[in-house]
Image (cartoon, rainbow, N blue to C red; front, side):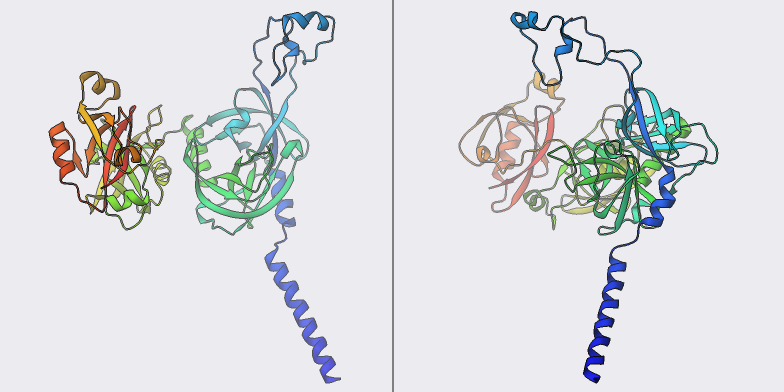
Length: 465
């Protein structure tokens, strides 16, 4: 009997422990959803009307179809028009949003309300209100709306900089028009850089996000908004386990500038950068491939005024470590113009700290551009002096241009006829004679940096003899 009682006791203890672990592992989202849902809205828009075609057969040309050949057109005369008539357009549900204040300010994505003539916001109690677009920022994909109202439900704003991978998060939105759909998952990664999105360090999650979730809130377990669901990675058009949200810290900074001044200003350093590969790290004497390699310093830029040079490797900005070159634009863009920022870098194997007074990002994207780079590994070239036409065409002041690429290290490296060599092993190239002298003195068995300008795009490649 004692053995049976002991076994039953152990069984009950194990069951209780398992239930406790399960309760801790899978949180109960019910309270969070009840409290947060009233502040989540569906957003519909009426798009600007496209020009009406004068072609009487335009109704037969749907997306992806080809024009009907003239010889077959008489078969379609008298058929009803298959396209909707332009008149009073019907609002289309495009995304989600959330109320951030009781007087009716709403955050959503720029792409949700882009080119809209009218924006309709549907609240959780089924009321539909026309919204004013206070302002919108394409670079961060954030838009601020305003609806008339008082004592409206609003979300609690959290701190996205406190998020960690593995943390539970929850999304509420209108995927495919299904209002207030709830999905949950974890943070997969933070500070993700995506192609063509230089200014946003995205939060990556595995929360199920689909078309219509755009602009909706991403919550932490405390019921605080930590992000705005913005993008998905997909090959099918639907959810594939990779979703990306704009950090709420970034979104609130943008919305405050829109609300306060009607537009967004960003910090500008004025450098073109590239990734540091393993071979480049060796050539610059770095212990590991990290940092942002400066391949060009813009004229009359804050970087030039601070003394930055081509070949510098920026390893920290304002105390924040730069692991990938794509990290730098995020940090620079968030510094207010006119403020001073400290830049830690490696130059010629030596550590330096410079201070730059950050400027205002111009209309063109010159914050810290990252060019497409082809990596290579070195020499075997015929070069000639730069003529005035090449200097003006590619905006270079010195260097030698490659006129022939023979079999050897240069060809294997991917160097091309027309590439302009401006720096080799830390020395600026002015003449052919100087170039030949530098080549003769290159060390063997280790990589050295070679800077070229290819069709106007500067880049470094590692050279190893």
